[in-house]
Amino acid sequence: MPLDQTPIIDALIQIVGEANLIQNEQDKARYLMDWRKQYNGNSMAVVKPATTAEVSAILKLADEQNIAIIPQGGNTGLCGGATPDQGEHNLVISTERMKTIREVDTSSQTITVEAGCILDHIKSAADEHGLLFPLDLGARGTCQIGGNLSTNAGGLNVIRYGNTRELTLGIEVVLMGGKVLSLLSKLKKDNTGYDLKDLFIGAEGTLGVITAATLKLFPKPIATTTGFAAMRDIDAAISLLHRCQAASGGNVIAFELMPKTIIENVRHFYPDTPLPISDIPRFSALIEIASTAEDSGTPDHEGTMPLEKNLTEVLAKAIEDGLVLDATIARNLTQRNTIWQIRELTPESEIKAGKAYKSDISIPLKHMSAFYDEAEKAATAIMPGIRIFGFGHLGDGNLHYNLSEPQEKRSDFLEYYPAFDEMMKTLVMKYEGSISAEHGIGQKKRDVFISTKDPVALEVMRSIKVALDPKHLMNPGKVV
Ligand SMILES: Cc1cc2nc3c(=O)[nH]c(=O)nc-3n(C[C@H](O)[C@H](O)[C@H](O)COP(=O)(O)OP(=O)(O)OC[C@H]3O[C@@H](n4cnc5c(N)ncnc54)[C@H](O)[C@@H]3O)c2cc1C
Image 1: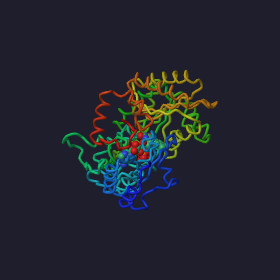
Image 2: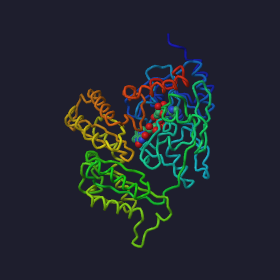
Image 3: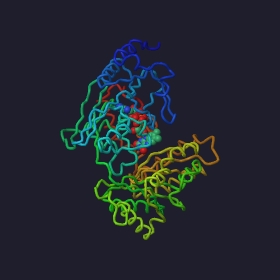
């Protein structure tokens, strides 16, 4: 007999008010489907608390009534982590009403925000105080900081500023049962026992609901320079990365690998997209360097900005040494945007190209080239004509090594996913990499995660899970 949910619904209305409890199927639908429309679930309701106290009351009720909780931020996650399963005895907690910026502290250079703050709004709030919150990803206008923390999101500037974990000083979390674990702190140094905040960052909602965080802010760059280089090969791109880091004092803020396949695909769907250079080889690199030094904003007597001069010299030497075949540097904002345009249009063009097997791997840089080639050979052996769209954050050793269906579409493409999974898993393990660099595990990568992670690490993770959530009510079916 189906459980009578009326008392639970009544209690939830008492906590958040009727207007903040979604029960009708049509309004619930967008919360029950993931961004890529690969996962769809059920839920008795979507509940939208506005405060930590309300989250606490919901988790107390959930514990008493054995209701599973699925925390959800902007729902832009790429592994189905925020989507409930088919059962109905669960609640989606959407943090979209928790969007207060509690404090910007310009002296400590921190910002304290609630979990539902949209990433772009945090960036703007920092900017209004002349500071930078450097986390940056394509979903910046929709994803929320609670989701960023829970997936330990990476993005474009990890090479210089680190991922979300490295940008976080403190968090506030509500545990199953309703206890509030208050770890909000502005301290860079605090060696008092275990660092509990790190347990919740990247936990994908399986240990508690993050309600707030204190994040690091940085000085805003005064000058930025952007270049695009046609590379001899991947190893040459890695050498160029190291040279750029050395010459700029570690100020490379983005270093993206752009294969010819991707550039051609972008141009196929967006033919007006200008090419930064005329002859595109198998691999190119997009480089961005920024500086906060005051003199970086002052041109020399020839009118050249110091960073531009610096990058020009590095590229000229790399051309001389045969690493770089051709290169260009943006002289103004329009040229910078032109260089970034191809990178920014990559995800959309990929979707237009048809179905794609997506991956988000990291590989030690010394093995990247061997991995790339071997994976290309293996994927082509599985499906001749498959298009290798392996691009992204080379500077972090992280590529989105996606396999796009052949130009002559294959109705059976999805049937090959297990073979691609196996191939990817084998090669990532062979080259000492990770099957998830920045997107997390969610439901998508759970099996491959469990089959590849060190068994002792899994045992420790399961012990932590049981200690914090003995009834397995927090985001069941995800991660461990
Ligand atoms: C166009 C596009 C580009 C992207 N680019 C990148 C990229 O470059 N780098 C990158 O790392 N990711 C990228 N992503 C993936 C995604 O944006 C990130 O994973 C983001 O951090 C998810 O935030 P969200 O608020 O949408 O979280 P959601 O999708 O809502 O949730 C993600 C996970 O976090 C959990 N969660 C959410 N909020 C909380 C909370 N308050 N407490 C506890 N658990 C919570 C959910 O249960 C789920 O497991 C991209 C996605 C898109 C659509």
